[in-house]
Image (cartoon, rainbow, N blue to C red; front, side):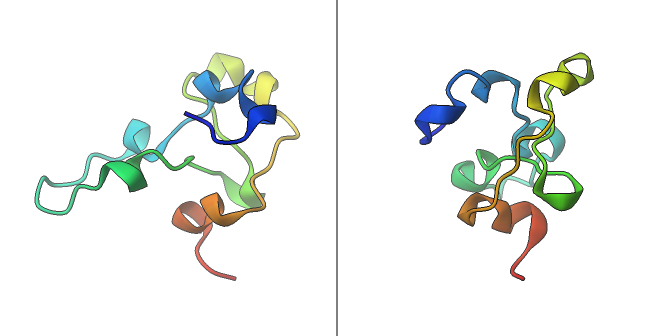
Length: 72
């Protein structure tokens, strides 16, 4: 669930790490799995490609980007 109220309308469309990667059981981490799976330029990605337009222009310039984009 989104901790940001302004994302509540979109959160069900935002892809998370567990949508793209299933870690082996010995290193799995639910908290990391819940982070958004971001594209290039800190863009949100969709769980379903048909919803891409819904997230167009939305970016994650905060700590949640670290899992996808690393530390810059």
